[in-house]
Length: 194
Image (cartoon, rainbow, N blue to C red; front, side):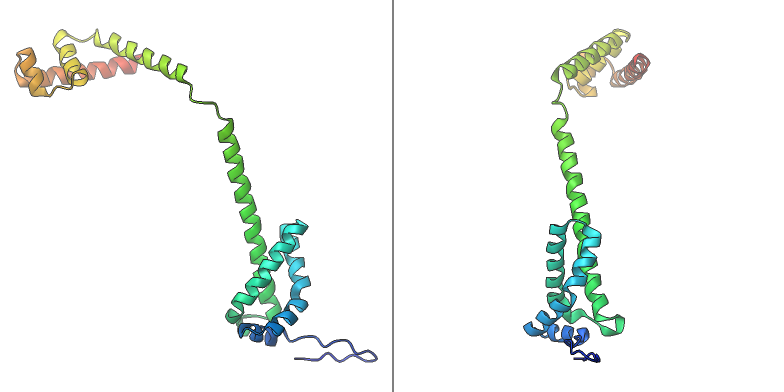
């Protein structure tokens, strides 16, 4: 440990944080206690500047110091000072907490909006379905008899082209043509009425 030299008084020596971190990396509880005492104040200050809430700041600072205990073997002195490494961990924890809080608030707002959305409107759905059915009936009346019969047998009766041809006693090609022409006219009719 480095000792501070003071004239006239004998304050406690300033700890060597890098040395303490090496001890923490080896699982030394005393080194962690000394490191904790040395950095707890600055860690809380960094966290409080980001989180703003005093109670949450204390919790995040504790989490950050636990993270220091767990990840001390990852400290590399060639990348920066020990205090900067510790304060960077604290800052990252604080930012994570703020992001988590914002995401949580956003989820709650979305849930609240969903709770306020009106129930499915069955009456509106029934009215729209009835109007669409009526529109299809009107358009079906504009088709020739063979077109209407072909479309009705295919889409309402579920018959194949061959079955429609047999049912109407028409050649298969004629049924396919009438069905295609009928669908084109229906599409045009339904599109024009919308």
